[in-house]
Length: 96
Picture 1 (tube, rainbow, N blue to C red):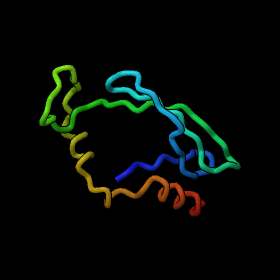
Picture 2: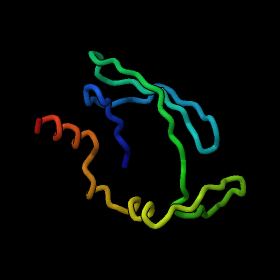
Picture 3: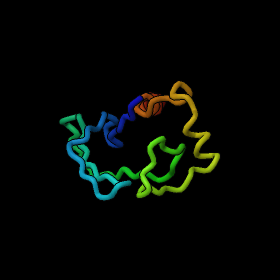
């Protein structure tokens, strides 16, 4: 499963042009809208925040808080239960 990033202006997909690691748990990414007429670009941060399950090969330097039950339940939801963000935005746009 992959996550689709969506332009909030034109609802086209965004692509990651480049990214750079800032920390073991933080990556900066520079995104660009794939719609040339829109051309929006943005900087984003992707951060690891909670451990859902322990690693089978733990690194002592990796220390994240264990996710609470609510976060783990959310992570366990099937992808089939959740509409794709792009599809959801398209449905909202057409219903206006």
